[in-house]
Image 1: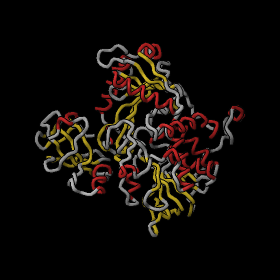
Image 2: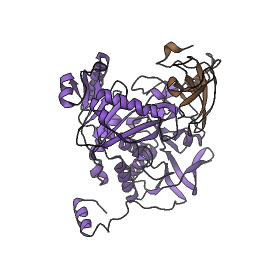
Image 3: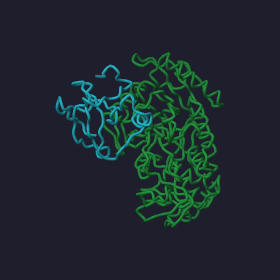
Amino acid sequence: MKYSALSVFLNGLRGNTAWQKMWRAPDPKPQYDVIIIGGGGHGLATAYYLAKNHGITNVAVIEKSYIGSGNVGRNTTIIRSNYLLEGNNPFYELSLKLWEGLEQDFNYNAMISQRGILNLVHNDGQRDAAMRRGNAMRLHGVDAEYFDKEAVRRFAPYLDVDQSRFPIVGGLFQPRAGTVRHDAVAWGFARGADSRGVDIIQNCEVTGLRREGGRVVGVETTRGFIGARKVAMAAAGNSSRVAEMAGLKLPIETHVLQAFVSEGIKPFIDSVITYSMGHFYISQSDKGGLVFGGDIDMYNSYAQRGNLSMVEHVAEAGKTMIPRLSRMRYLRSWGGVMDMSMDGSPIIDKTPVENLFINCGWCYGGFKATPASGWCYAHLIANDAPHPLTRQMRLDRFARGNMLDEEGSGPTPNRH
Amino acid sequence: MASLIDCPHCGKRPREEFTTLGSAVTRPSPSADSETWTDYVYLRDNPRGMHDEFWHHADGCRRWIVVSRNTFTHEFGGTRDAAGIAPMISPTEKTSQK
């Protein structure tokens, strides 16, 4: 069923009883062309683009819980393409372009709102870095604008620009950045993939990879063995555990990142603002809650919950930037587990094991990359060759010394 | 995570007194081959379960310690001094290197 204003109207007349389920709940077939491990945003997007761009529809997405239960439902919903490096920027710009057409493409309301992102800067060094990054973006044809102090004040009058501790001297603004209804991304891709014949198998955990003569021939699951010509991992947060089933050791540590939402208030913040002294980013959801987050908790963790000291730290950073937040109350907090890679950038590549592919290492930045990640991963799986935009996101780049380190913080995963 | 860490020198102290560096991997010999060094610098076991890691008692005895900790339940298994296992130099803690 195609969604449209007319379908909403007609179904309303029928008491909303005629809506169909958005995807089936099929039993696994004995054999698929491609099995994707992980029914998060990236896994579902990969299945969608495999079917849509490459005509490969004999595909199963295997999810150990329900789809959208992981990081696609746990992020702060920000999309942007304000990256510096050659190996990153065109990839994230592809993602932003796909976001711009996504709702029409998969016929689902993902509430994409291009409200802009402002990265504040607080000293000369940060200003120079922001201008360099802005210039790099413009050279790639991406929108970027530098705001001086007065422009920042006009744009966001609630910021404490003249504070004594971390005065704000300017900011880098990307007008086309914004926010998305994150759950709808999982649902939209799932519905789009399912309608093209992809089987989405929920509550089915992969427990092993079966290999014959060195090549992968399928996966062992809690619902038995399922055969596949190609197996693609998209299990960020748990990538190391899945890769271990194939005897691979990854350049990844798993860390917990917390996010928060406040009680709902009237319209207050109409953009996304990031603070550069301490790590803090904030936007306001359409429901009115302020959505914000900070750093990871710094220690390795597979628990989807964080520590109180980081809750306090994030509140302190937010208050320094926007003093009137001190009156706000936390409504909820939650944690998601991240693949923190050794250079802060993702990996989309083949593995040394034949027929096994890997998509991992998204650190904090996986959500905004969802469409491009699916697009490029599907290309890799279908053609057995990397998409040109992911040529610097290879698994062996660490051994070769070709790091893609946007922040230049070296092989320390908890500092990216 | 637990709010107290049992420092082998100071006893149970608040977790905020400590900073963490990551996996307690042992530095290979300078003459080791490139594959061994790549493994040491970039690859991690990343277990979901007990994990040995370097913590620094920054606001206490300023010793590096090895903490065994469960990465899923956050329970502590035990701590010992890190002497003998050279920690990497953390970018923000260059001054606290032993």
